[in-house]
Every structure is written in structure tokens, then in C-alpha cells.
Image 1 (cartoon, helix red, strand yellow):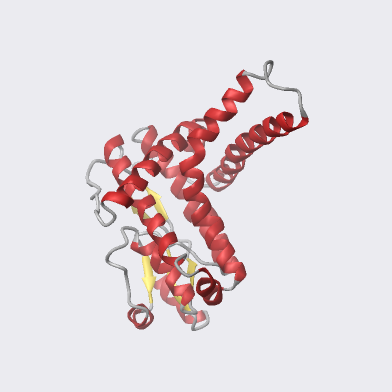
Image 2 (cartoon, one colour):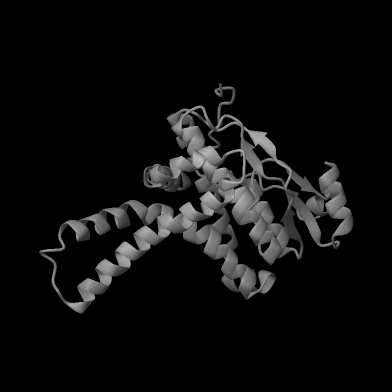
Length: 267
């Protein structure tokens, strides 16, 4: 609280919210909790501080946000129909001319150590991100006018591209493996060669880039030992893709249903 207060006091008046990093306290319970810890450390200690430094829109996490109350009330606070209302709120603050930043002192959270609670939680998160992208894309020109081209591009690069990649990842993965297994029967034309090269480059590059970022964040932290789990990243991303498609179905049939996450499962 003191850290947040001092940063608010020393920054300009447009700073409206500070996001504290979330760390997982049951990271060594099992593989799922460990991968959750990797993901949280990469997001809150790697990606969000950089976005804050660049002063681009930040999709806030659902915990440990410090707001200026007058600004929060002025913009209408949280959207009760968005199931990841903090992510939406972070974007709306930017649209109203404010900005968000981060502070380094963490708070602690429990990762779902069981698969079904994890699936329901991730479904809700991705459904809320889909809602946020749809809401803020209703009038593209108005959105660009509010944010500017750089911030609008950063928003879609982070949120829209993640949603798309989550949905297409299993198909892209299957197509890439099919290409590799059928190299001998594929045409030797330059187009086929370009497709194969591009697929393999994207596949390896995607895993490697995220893995290196995660490793860099984890290396000098108390969570360094979970970096060995990075080799199972492809499996974890496939699980996220399953929840992404579940989120898309929920967005259509029950867009505002909030699947509660049970707590107290940590050892």
C-alpha cells in the first residue's frame, strides 16, 4: 500500500491505476500449478512492466490493483457484464485519457491444482478477453481516435492476437506436423518449400521466444526451479486452446455466466 501511495504521489495526474504482480504460492504442488506460476511470472514480471514503460494499454489482472477512487468512479468503474472486468477496465482507462503502471512488490495467489477448476477459470478469462475485444472494436475509428494508432495497435497485438492464436494453435500444430511427416511426398515447388519453412519457423520461434522470456524472468527469482517445466510448454498451450474453444462456445450460448474458481485446494 505504501509503495502504491508513493508512486501515485511522485507520478503525473494521469496515472490512475497501479498493478501489483501476482505470484503463485503453491507452485510446487504439481505440474499444472507450476505452469500457472511460470505463466504468471512471465506476464506480471516480464510483459506488463514493459507495457507500462511504453505507456500502452494494460489489461489489468483481477487482483491487487490500486486505483484513484475519483477516476474509477468517473469512468463508470467495472462493467458487471464482462467476466474479466479488470482487463476491460484497463483499456477503458486509456480511452478516457488515463494510464496504468506497475509496482514490483507482489501479492500471492493460489493456482488451481486440479484440471477441471483450471479449465473453468481459463475459460472465463478468455471469454472475458473476447468480450473486451468485441466491445472495444465496435467502432474501430472511434477506438483509434481515443487511443491513437500506437496504442490501438498494441491493444490488438496483445489481446486480439492472443485470442486468435489460442484458437488456431491446435490446427496450426497439426498442419505443421503433417508437413514434416510428409516431406518426401510434398511437391518440391517453391511455394510448398516456403509454406513448410514458414510453418516450422513459426512453430519453433513461438515456443522459443516465449520460453526465453519466461526463463529470463524466472532465472533470478525464487521460482527459478520451475523453469525446467518450460519443456512442457506445447502441452500447456494445447490445454489453453481447449479452454479457448470452450470460451468461444460460452460467449455464444452463455456470455455472462461466471464460473467460480474454488479456493483452498492448495497444499
